[in-house]
Length: 231
Image 1 (cartoon, rainbow, N blue to C red):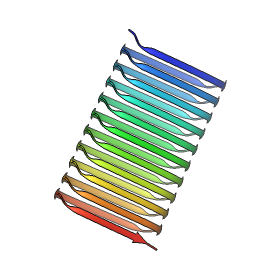
Image 2 (cartoon, rainbow, N blue to C red):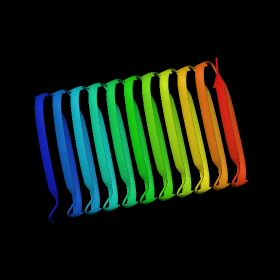
Image 3 (cartoon, rainbow, N blue to C red):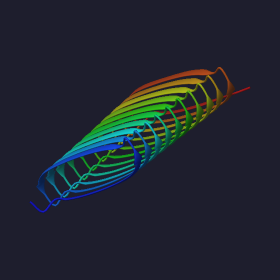
Image 4 (cartoon, helix red, strand yellow):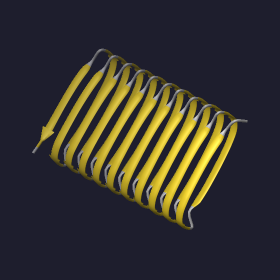
């Protein structure tokens, strides 16, 4: 009832599948190129999804269950893959991928969680999982073979990951209330691991150069850590 879907495709062997159950859900799919594939499933009320794919063999899947969830996926290039799953109310996801063989996975369950993923290059990978209320994640990757994994459970946790270079790896796990993590990696084959459990903990990691390794573990309330590595 009162759902809306708009599909526009130019090229060859593109495929789009849209399933909507509920009311006032909206989906807009645009695909230009060869053998791009898009799947959108919406169950609930007033969920919105926008997908734009330009190139060859790009693949996007969006699953939304609930009320007023929003998703935007833009993929330009060759064989990029995006998977977005949202369950709850007011969750928002924005995925932009430009290049070749980049992959992104976003799972959000709860209320008003937000995720922004931007990947430019080749073989970059991002995995974001958020469970709770008002958690926020931002991931920016530019280069080749960078990898980011963000897991947040709780209320109002925030994570920012910036990777520029080749083979950088970042893992962030935050459980609790209003924990904040900022990871910046510029260079080659740097590794960062951040684990924070509790409330109001903050971690800042800056790695520039080649082959640095950092591990941060914080448990409690209002702990603060700052790591800077360069060569």
